[in-house]
Image 1 (cartoon, rainbow, N blue to C red):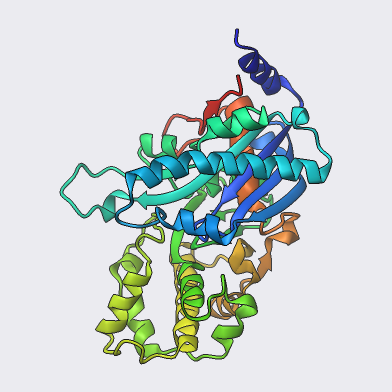
Image 2: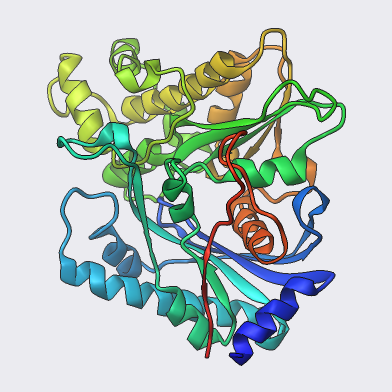
Length: 400
C-alpha cells in the first residue's frame, strides 16, 4: 500500500488529529491559516484552534488573482498558470506559518484547502439555454500543496455538494450544526464575508424544527469594491467612510427591487452577480448621472443594503416568535455601522461576535474546512437534504 495512504488511514483512527484549515475569500485579502486540534466526529466533534494567522497577498499577487476572479471572460493561459502558482504560493505560506509557530510539518496530519473561488454559478443564474445544473470553481492545486509541504491535502470540497444536487454553498451549515448547536438557546451563525450567509440552529431539544443555511446577498463585496475604487483602500475601516455619508433612499429602493431578494428560498449567490456592473446599472435606472453621487453616499447606501438584506432574510426564515442569539463572524463583524444597523433592524434579538462562542471571527471559515476534512477522514458525512444519503466532501492529494 502507498505509504502516504497508509499514514492517512492511521490518521483516521487517532483520538486527535492536527489539521490545518485554509480559507481564501473572494475579497482576496490573503490566506487564512488555522491550526486545529480535532477529536471525534459527527455530533461528538470537538475542535480547538491552536494557532491562526492571515497572510496577506501582495499587490502583485492580488492583481494576478483579479485577472480570473468573478469575471465573465478570462484567459485560459492565465487560468492554467494561476491554478498551479496559487497552490505553490499557499504551500509557501503554510510552511512560513508553521515555522513562525515553531511547529514541525511532520506533526500535521492533513491540510484542508478551500482554494480560491474564481466563479460561482447557481443554475438560476445561467444566461444560456443549458441543462440547469449548478457549478462552482475553486483553484489552487492541492497536489502542489501536498508535495511541497509533505502533508496530505484535502481540497475541492464544494464539488460533491453540486454532484449531490446542491449549489456548492453555503458549506458552513454542516459544521455549524456539529459545533454550535445548544441545548437551550436557538442561534443564528451569521458570516459576513464578500457575500452574507447564515445558519439557523434551533435549540437541540426542538427536534421538529430543522436547521437551514442560506445566503443573504452582498456582505462586504460592494463596500470593499467601492472603497478600493474611490479611495484605493482594501476596505472601509471602522465604517469611517460610510459614516461620513448618508443613505440615498431612492437608490436603495432600486437596489432592493432586484428579483434576487424576492425569492424566499434557501439559495446562494456570489460577487459575479452582485458586481460593480450590477450596481452601475441600477444607479442609472434610479436616474443618477455617472459621477453624480458622492463616494461616501454610495458606500453608505451599499452598507445599508447589506444590513437590510441580511435582516430581511433572517426575518423571512425565522419561525414566528423566535428570538435567537445572532453570532457574527467574517470581515463584516469588524464593521461597527453594519453590525449596529443589523441590531437596529432586528429589535429584541441579541447580536454578538462569534468570539462569544470561543471562535475567532476571522478564523471561523478556515476552521470549518478543517472540520469538513476531519469528517471526511473519520466520520460518516453529511446529508445535503434531510432525506438524502450522507456524502463526504473533499478530494485527497498525497505527497508521494
